[in-house]
Length: 262
Image 1 (cartoon, rainbow, N blue to C red):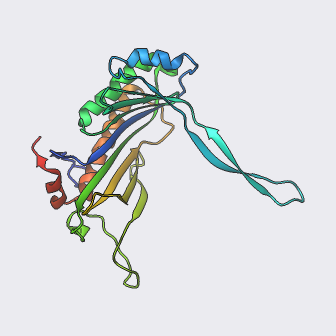
Image 2: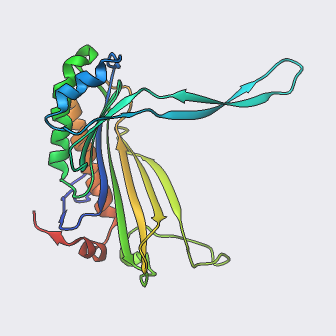
Image 3: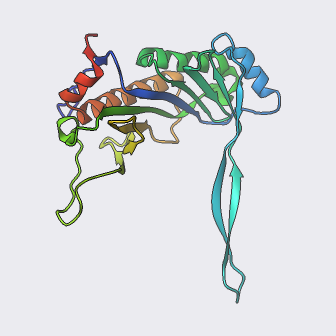
C-alpha cells in the first residue's frame, strides 16, 4: 500500500497492452565518445544484441532572433545536432538497447517480456559499459516509460465503463468525438518524481477505436547516484507506474487484457 491507501498490487495479463516499455539511466558525466566508441560498445554487448547496430543521429530545430540597434528584429531557424547514439538489438528486434554519451536505455516491444527482465537488461548493459564512464558510472536520473495501445469495438461509445479518465465538455459543444489528445504533467508530493501522462486517440482497424495511454515517469535530474541508489529509484518509479496505470483502468478493460494470476 502507498501512503494514500491505493494498492500497489501488480496485476498480470495474458494480453498486456504494452507496445513499448523503456527503462533509462542518464549519466552524471558524459562518456568519452570518438569514432572507435561504437565498435567498442558493440564488442561489449553483441552476445546480447548480435544484429548489426544502427547509428541514431537526431536534430532539434530552434528559433534564434537577431536584433540590431535601430533595425527590426529578424528570426531564423537553427538546427542543433544531439549526441550520436547507437541502437543495438536482437535478431527479432523485440529487445533493444540504446547507448549514447549521456544515456543508456533498454526497450521492449511485443511480446512484452515483463518488468524484471527489462530491468535486468538495463543493469546487465550498465555493468558491461560501466568502466567506460567517468566517475565510476554515477547516475543523474532514472526514468521509465510505458506506452500502451488499447483497442475497443467501435460500438463502445462510453469509455467511462473502461477508464477512470473522462471528458467533460460543455453542452454548447458537439459531444460526438472523432479524435482527442490530452497531456498532463504531474509532480509527486514528495518531489522525487514526475509523471507525464498522455491520452490520445490513434488510427484503429476497421470497426474499432483505439487510443494510447502513455506513462512517462522521471526522477529529478541532477542527482549523483551510485548504481544501488539508481536501482532503488528505478523500482520506485515502476511501483508508481503500476499504481498510475491500474488507477486509470477499470475491471471491464482488465477483462479485455485477460487478467491472470501471478
